[in-house]
Amino acid sequence: MAKYNVYDCSMIELSKHHSDRKGNISVVQNGDTIPFNVKRVYYLYDVPGGESRGAHAHRELSQLIVAVSGSFRVTLDDGNVKRSFVLNRPYQALYVKPGIWRDLDDFSSGAVCLVLASDVYKVEDYIRDYQEFLAFRQVEMTDNTD
Ligand code: TYD
Image: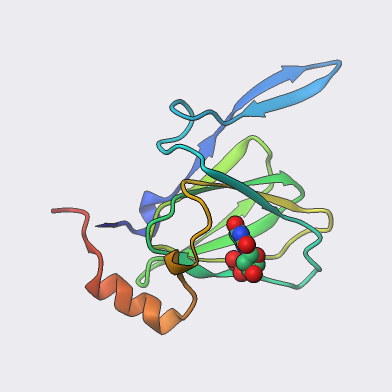
C-alpha cells in the first residue's frame, strides 16, 4: 500500500444541478466523480454537541466524506502533519486516502456526515490505537514517492 500524506487528501467539488424553483442536486458517480468505486454508504447523525467521532485510520479503505447537512470538522493526520477541514457544503467532499488517521468533531446541530467508502465493512481494516497507527505508518507502508 502506498504511503499517502495529508496533502494527498483534498476537497472535491461535486456537480451541483441548481433549479431556482426546486432546489439542488449533487451527484457522486462511480467512474466519474471519484477514483474508486463506492461499495458502502453510511452516515453519522444525531451526534451530540461536543462529541467527537472517528479516532481511527484505515489500512486500505478510501473514503469520501460529505456534510450533506450542517457542519463538522475533520482533522486528518499522517503521523507527521495534521490538517483540518471544515465541511459545511453538501456539494463538497473530502477525499481521504488510505492510512490516514481522522478525527471528526465540532458537529453542528442537525449535522449529517455522509461517508462513501471503497469497500464493505471490515473490522480488520481499522487501526484504533494511535501508537499502532504510528508503527503502521513507519513499517507497513512504502513511500509514495518511489
Ligand atoms: P465506528 O467506526 O466506531 O464509528 P466512528 O469511527 O465514526 O465513531 O462505528 C460505530 C459502530 O458501528 C461500531 O460498532 C461498528 C459499526 N459499524 C458497522 O457495523 N458498519 C459500518 O459500516 C460502520 C462504519 C460502523
